[in-house]
Length: 76
Image (cartoon, rainbow, N blue to C red; front, side, top):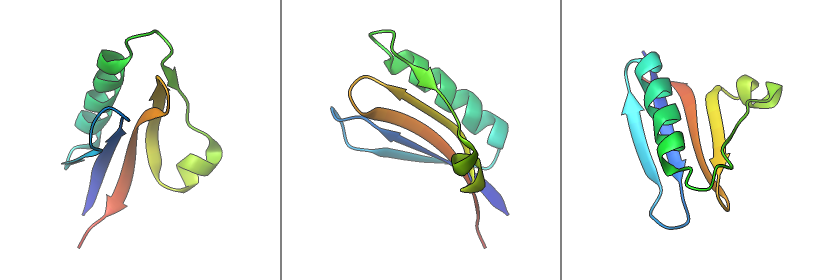
């Protein structure tokens, strides 16, 4: 079974990890959360080929070192 893992890292709080069985729901939630926390309008959503090879489905940065990413992982 594959799951989508959302990792939200912000220097003002502990990192948050959320697991979704539905990949679409994880992507929607992560993008909405990134926009919610982008207080200064510097949100960048980008996904490189290397990130895709590593199983990443979404990556956004905002602020000073804050990021949200979605990865797909196989669980048994």
